[in-house]
Image 1 (cartoon, rainbow over the protein chains, first blue to last red):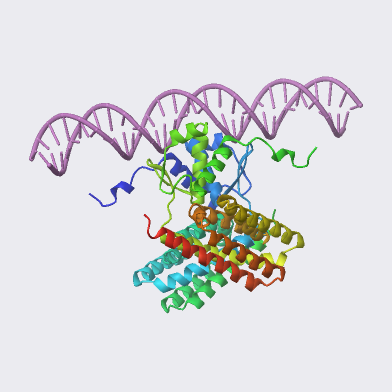
Image 2 (cartoon, rainbow over the protein chains, first blue to last red):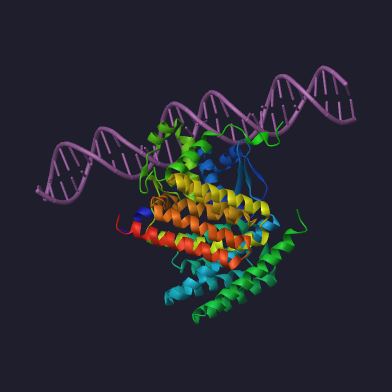
Length: 222
Length: 222
DNA sequence: CCTCCGTATTTTGGATCCAATATTGAAAAT
DNA sequence: ATTTTCAATATTGGATCCAAAATACGGAGG
């Protein structure tokens, strides 16, 4: 019998709904601002409203949806100020995560990062925007989790979630895809040499460009 | 008619339960590690299990309770590592908040801080541990909210929540209460002079002492 | 034509009921 | 005596039903 057989249990309806909704929101299939009609969504997902509502409460805590009593849930919209705030907080937290990670990086960790980077490049070559976003995320989360600070990693993950719906636009541009690959290579290189300052700097550049791009994407619309 | 009449609506059962539970956990009345029996709690609070479960979901998102599918909720327990991690993250976020706050502090803000500090001193004089914790929290949150970064403030608030159950022990000691008052005064003084570095430093001292104290409280037990 | 008000409908909030899973205890086999 | 199995019980997960609030609609009045 496998060691972690207990883990492979059929997911509860609630977990299923949570995953579906998160994916729908972070990929932009459920656009920011859309009000959530519980009855319709529940029927679409083939569950009752109870697990749906609990999933929505979780998403509310993560900032993916907003809630008003007696009015219901909406897919969260980010103002420009919100966007800048989220990226600033990410900057603070990710710097800490990277510095700690550099102190603890094992060869196995580096291998996993290489593998993630390979996935990124593969997705980029195929022009698969969604796969690119997923792999990019995997790359960063792998790095952050090396810090050995699970709560910090969780916070960063939820911050990524809140901007994912907007970030996926970013990879539509081939130039941006190329740029991301180069930046990842620079980060990996710095990590291999245990150059913490440099690694932090590469990520700052990464973020700065992303936020600038997103600002320009957001400003004309809405 | 009052301008914000709409706000003063009777709270939903869910909001009521959320408040009650949060208070119970952060004040330590519901001790860390206690498993939560939904049926019993629901009856005690005079509501059904549905709003209770939704409240628990938000508390899970805030890290106040843990959840395992088919096993239920427990009041979260913090390991020493968790405690250090939470305080480290707080350090990162609060430094940012204070620096931004210093740049934007108005005289009205300072007045509100003075008022909060007066409450702290009053509670300390009366030896009211709970009121002291509340007022101390008000003082800090007032400061952090001056940064004009609502998401940052929210993050910091939830981090405070996760350690509140442990921190309330801290004020049991009269020496600690005296110390906190002095530290607040130092912070206020620095803020009045717009000395950001100094203000950050006073808060770092504040936290460092608290975490040391909590570590010694946590180490022998459990 | 527009505004205001009252009613009808929709949508959310909450309670109860049922199903699925986990836990407990006792009996039986080694 | 210890361990294993299996049944009984307790607890969580989910579905349905009902109540309360909000929204939409239509008519009366200006």
